[in-house]
Length: 248
Image 1 (cartoon, helix red, strand yellow):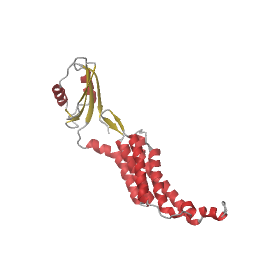
Image 2: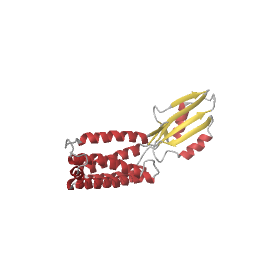
Image 3: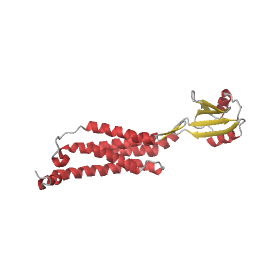
Image 4: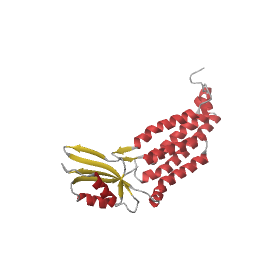
């Protein structure tokens, strides 16, 4: 058989192969569009992973899944085997996405960010898989549900009763010895309870630094961060502090 036989080349452009290619292209375009819908909220909020990332994740997941269904047309219909296991492909997709998800989760002290982005990237991956296996209605519904969840659930969380959490770091003057019970009373007077087991104490050259998590008794009773900062700036023995909302 000639290396460049016309019949061999024509097999890559036969009617069934071209039809399969068109179906794959439509799947990829749909996955790209749905992924971008899910990623719009992240782009709007200025996150590192935006519409492009979500669109690519969804499209790649769809591409790797959909080609398994057309294994009979691999290599112009000249594949040695006409069967491929889609479950192994999906397993590989989810494993690969785990590395991307780990890259967007950041831990800064007791503060963790990026969990919502990682979860929504996983959702984009699942949408791509649904498109790849042909569950188009389910994929569209999941994309809409994910987009609504990313954009509006935060407003629902703000409306529902909650206990906001803040991370507090206090640096005390050298040779100053703070008392845990007095700090707990001060926090309680401002509507906060120090979370059990969250207190961490370090000492550098006789200078103490306390780190702890404070949980508001309720959203209404917890003092605003600006008020806490003003009071800490005037507190005896405190030479430095940091107060921030716990993010996840």
